[in-house]
Amino acid sequence: MKLEKNAIDRENYLNSKHAYLNLFFEQANDAIAVFDLEDHVIAVNPAFEKLYGWSKEEAIGRILPLIPPENEEESKQRKVDLMLGKKYHLHETTDMRKDGTFFDAQISLSPILSPHGEIIGSSVISRDISYIKENENLILQSEKLKLVGELAAGVAHEIRNPMTVISGYVQMMNEDSDSPYYEYTKLIQNETERIELILSEFLVLSKPQANQYAPINLAEALSEVVQFLQYEFQSKAISLKIINEFLNITILGNKNQLKQVFINLFKNAIEAINEDGSITLQVCKSKDEKEIYIQIIDTGCGIPPNVLDRMFEPFYTTKTNGTGLGMMIINKIVQDHQGSIQIKSKQHVGTEILLTFPIMTQ
Image 1 (cartoon, rainbow, N blue to C red):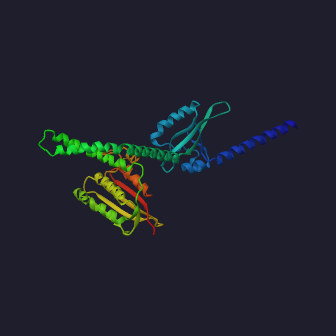
Image 2: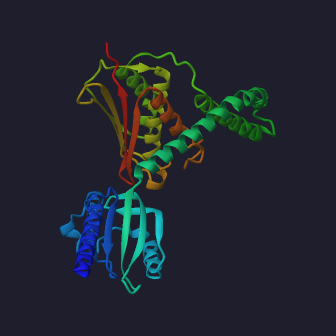
Image 3: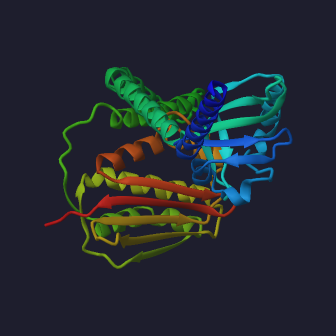
């Protein structure tokens, strides 16, 4: 009688344990998947289906493409390590969803052992940490911007004083074009002008001043920029198409700073086009009419993905005479105006830039 009761208690315990494990598996927030030794899926939980896009019916019994092609060698090494009994805890990598998109993943890999200690499969617990990576990048960019601002505030004015003296004397020397040193002094003048450009950009990045914002007619500001760059459009035979039905839209800001943004973006587009290309400027409203969208599309050479990812980094440039501060300054001005900037580009096709600003209400 006692043996029978013990057997029943043991069975109830095992059933209860199995039920709890099943609840954990099904209700876990992290994606969980179990694989056999040939990487066929044995089981997945709902969180896995949601994160990776594969339903349970689609996944079980298949070898799923969860690894981006460029990470296959790393994945193979992890498989070898697992077969040797090694575990991976909170390992950061990149995984792939069913639709082919990538995401930053944090995974824990473990071999599954039989009662005799043999490896019969593997399990993976993964979570999407893309938002964490994005926040880390934002913090890093913020720290860089802060560092550049402090550097600008502390150094730019001090450098400008001796540079003004040097530039003045070099200009006087350059008045004599017959001088044997004319080519050298001309070069010095060009370089001092370049230093002045860098210092000017530094000062934009220094600690924010009390901006005197005023209502700006967006159409008028854009028209002034286009007129200013008219010669450059014509000299490279670039056709400019403007689509703007909102001629009375008003935004609050610093007109000179915003014009600097548009001039720099147009100049980048002009430089990206060899000849006979086109630039389209389109203005439209958001559905709730609270924001204005300014779209600049060019048919230039496009931006490589590795460059696009670093567009707003300080001192990063692919231009021979670039300072690496232009796009960072643009981003700062746009953010100071409560706006946003997005860039899409495809090599040998062109680049699309979308600027968003809040519309000034009465």
